[in-house]
Image (cartoon, one colour):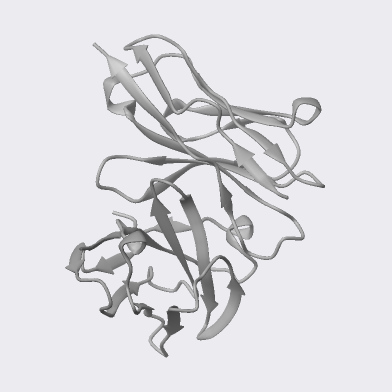
Length: 114
Length: 116
């Protein structure tokens, strides 16, 4: 079955430190891949997406993600975390032949220490 | 502000009751998607409408139904509510019809439903 896995439920980093959030997918063919952020009381906001081409994708708010086909991964990174980055992050995938069902991972809650 | 409006923001109701959640998409967006977010199930796709027609169906219970009206707003109807239906229900909209992959989707702030 198609699935998206985010192995880390919670991550805590210090402000100014680098960040990497992991995402793995299980699909027959490479799906479209997305990262969303959900701040408390807010809806989901798209950070970045990968369809094809360059495997390093730049997004908003200084985030980037790298697609690695060999590892079926699409990890999100940020070189220096700000306190305002504290939120929940969701990786999602859309299978090219799976209709319109965007499949989300379970989410990673990021906490930022001052 | 994503431009997608969901009402009400919070809803508390008793088991067995019926509720209607409303979503107004961004101006010009023809697709509306409904998602359920719960602690045990995560974010689950329920259903998509495009320009008034049902386009795709996900893990939507038979007790739940939705529709999209000529003015493109959508309603999600939840009936015979159970405790396990307590969740955050999100609506998203996009301009295209081919799923969230062909264009950016914008999410509303959600309706938090509590069934007591």
